[in-house]
Image 1 (tube, rainbow, N blue to C red):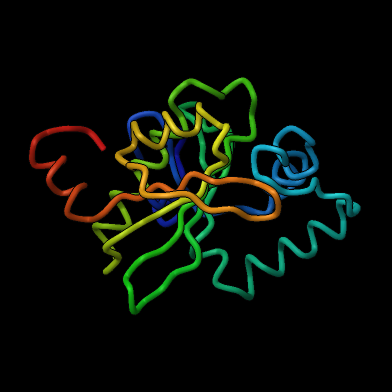
Image 2: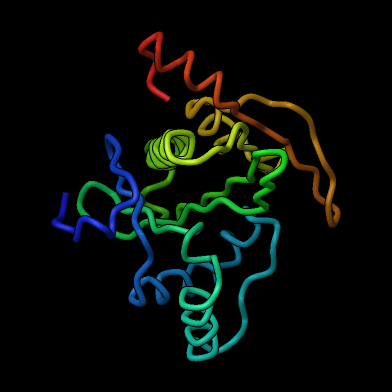
Length: 187
């Protein structure tokens, strides 16, 4: 993998690097957030603001909010920025947070990058924080995402409905991940 400054990398896994975001990532993110199909997978509307406005907002968030500490870039084994992964809705009392990922590069879809990055971030968060549970929402019709999250150790725990969409709720708990690791099962 490419030579990043040590403090840039959050975690390395078999196929991906999860790293802090850089200003250069804003252009990729803008393209992905403007894409109709990617927006559909995220149950959102595509971004329609001009790039300079998007970049200014993005830069502000990275410098002045906790976004930079919870939202990371995903790179493939060749150092290409292929997507983003984040945790949010952190509840310190319940010791849980929500996880989300988007692989923006279509040529990287269905190749295991998403589950690899998710498993790596899950292991990192359970190793370095007090979190006991991570959960996520994924659209009920997105079978590829369901398989990817299952491969990373998540199990179905319910469903929810928001803005006309039904979501599958999945979770992983610290004790499950620990048991899998002790049995030698990759997360």
